[in-house]
Image (tube, rainbow, N blue to C red; front, side, top):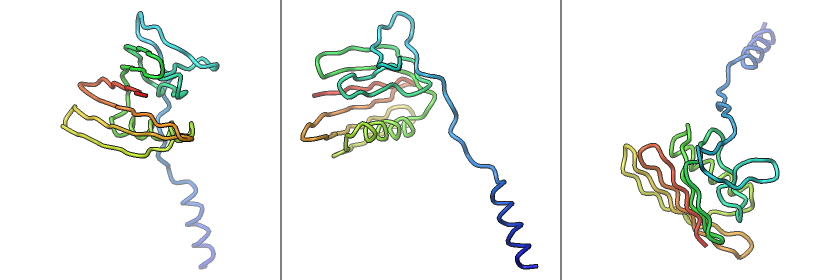
Length: 140
């Protein structure tokens, strides 16, 4: 009887619903916005880093000056989720977050300043969120 009970619990646990992250369409450029794309056709926020725009985002503005860049975009995700995406994307590209400074003025004014490192190279990144729009600056 005990084995039957354990088997029932295992079957029940296997059938339990799990939380899934929503799947968003690929990022797209807003009307009249020129963007750079990688070999796979994905929009790049910074070609020097190889940083691809988050899924579901709409690029409103981009400017590149050497290694520096600025991008404005909307995203269906919150500031916290977008910051988590940024840190994971940088880690996947081999960058390590050396410093992180958060400034929050809820309900809709957030800023994160990151210092990233890879193979002796350092860069600064500023991610801002104001009134539903993200602003990502990559500084040399």
